[in-house]
Length: 277
Image: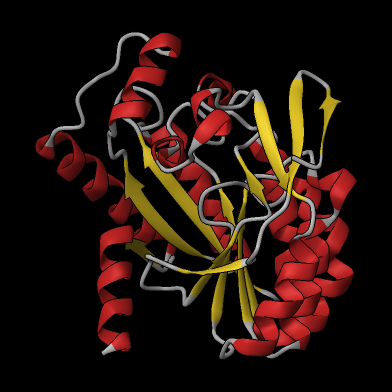
């Protein structure tokens, strides 16, 4: 550990890493870059809890590890790795509040774009607006996705420390207005939480307004997540096949009505697997 500091109610610990880029297990990315371990947003459904070792995983939303020497490690990685598509981030939010202090995501995006990599950013934070000066310089070598699970205030039950959906929507509009490719991650769709028309219809309208693709994903229960959710959410309804079929049909019907390009996460994965071959 390089050091421990406090940031509000979250404990922040600085660590050092040997590498910054890792091979991605997701077919749409060649590499993953995660400047932080753990996430201040504390979303109760986040699958990253099952894949995050040590304290940040066990105390989700309470502890964040900062990879203090990330930029140095990334500079070394860039020299030896073939340029490709980098997912920023895959197990944490790159623009969680701690990023306002450390600026690791900002510097990493600039380095990657200048080195010929394509950067794909996904966040729930309006903080990304701060970096539009460097993101816009990436041109077609960047795309930005905003996760929006619902536009209603009920989002706070599952995303306790994330930015309000209206702030995310405003950020998306601003980014799209610059000609940057944008998309919305509508997921996870959770039974009894954000599976009503009033949850996702405004998201589809936003996608139409910003010419954004929508990637739809269902709730995928995992052991650690279910245990964590059971302490925060009651009851937890089962994500049955019939429930998802009915819900997805309703979402896709709206997509067709609004003329929005919508795709499920499974279909996107399959398309990218075929491209790899």
